[in-house]
Amino acid sequence: VAAQSDEHLDFLIWCIGFFTGMRLTSAEAGYLDATPILPGTLTDFLVQPSELPVAVNMADNFWKQHSQTPRNAKRLCAIIHSLFLSRYPHALCFEQFNYLYFALDACFALTKELVSVVGKKPTHALRNEWMCNQFKMPVPTWASPTANGSEVSVVRNNSIHESLFFEEPLGFAIYGGNPPSPNRLNVTLEMQALVCRLIVALLGRPDCSYVRSDVTSRQKHGLYP
Image (cartoon, rainbow, N blue to C red):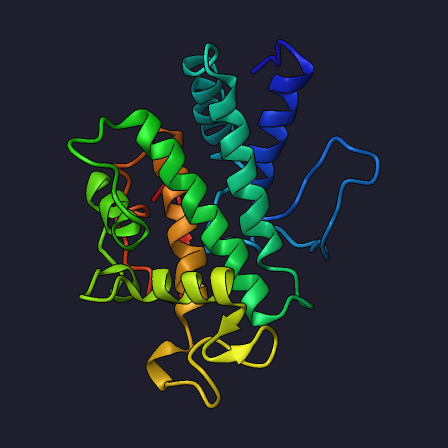
């Protein structure tokens, strides 16, 4: 792969950082968060060294396919950035949640560009389920809509519009409340896992077994089994 411009090179660096599970940058001081020195720290999948050229070619194909709509490549970089920001070890739980919701919202914006939406644009309550259905991915329980909206859309609305996170001022509760419900402890980890799968799907591999694997698993997956 030979980058044709600085923008092309930056895009590939963002994607290589994602594939290796650690933040990479072409900037001299571009880190906004704590940066791990071990590959595979920021994602729940592993790419073997021999597989990395295949992954980079996939990213390069995305760049070429979207050369006429450069905002799509910027969106993908923004998704990776928000995902990585959510892993900042000193982030409060509401900050981690909001970064992940930003990433999911950007995934929706990009998916909407690639997949024709029939009828009205899905609301916040329906967007995550809609994306999962587009890529034939299992729908997490927190993304399934109810009469009041999906679980995460309700949390998002309270956080953004009322500065309340599980009925407490921002920073005074973790996800699920104080103390959290046992089955809510891993929602942010599952959101991170879903963002990772959506990135791979958006890059062009919605059919791989990793994308369609359950986000409730805590094991590391191979991207190219």
